[in-house]
Length: 375
Image 1 (tube, rainbow, N blue to C red):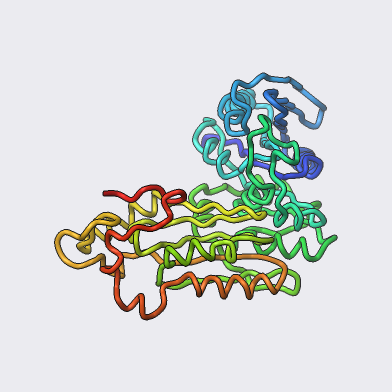
Image 2 (tube, rainbow, N blue to C red):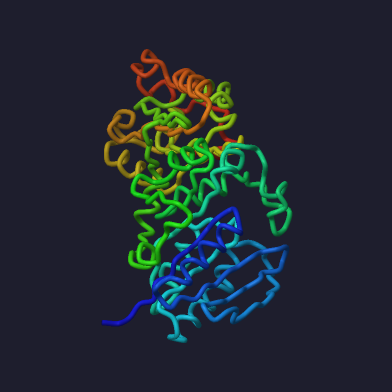
């Protein structure tokens, strides 16, 4: 059997937690080497180390100062050389603090011959996670952006790291922070302490990019606890486009993490993504799911968004999307507000009973977010 070297991705917004976890894995039962990257401005610092000490510490100038560019231009060749060296049984890849492990895992999944992805691990500090996840600081405001142009919220970055991970290492110093992380972790993720991550649990399992991606597409709603809550709001009815614009802040603003999908009757074949964290909200068309839905609707006799179906009636309801938002927070008053706003935005039962025919060709105010509808 051909040997394959496991590569574990370690992510964290806290470089001390990231480096501590990486070192713990490096000093485990396997002969392990760590490849760490830190990004400052246009400079990428690459540090390679194993149990004998630092093997390489190099500063590299990047034309494009972003973590994804760094992974594709520098990390992949370095990982290939470490695998080819044949000196180590496992590799830890400690990624830049603002990196999205989803993107990096996808880049690496088939790019390093002789290796495979082991589990993705994210380390979180329970004492800072509430402010990081639900506050309104941006990456640029924290001075963590390489170019000064990264306007992602800290919450967006941290949520991406927690929700994609196979293992989430978090302490219990702050029960609110701990429970908040537990609410966002995937249903099949392992939640453990900082010092309880062992090398067999990480390197002895393979990471599935497909399974991990499905966690993001359809997030799990965990039962609420005394310190943090998650509500799942789901309905077959779409949002009324005008009421959505009027009430969007009541659903999306504040100290919340919100994920899901929705649709509007003026665009019956567009599955729209809803992503909110740290006071920022992003909505847009999910092209992959929309195309799949459009195929179903064409089979059922429907037409493109805004166009009359040819031939036959409006698209069959069975081929339409559903509206589903999974929202997490810590203040019970926010949960009540969001529930009410969600119901307000939906078509009423009377409007829904009229079907989609009244909406065909009708204008809406969503072009800035969803783009222009197909002719």
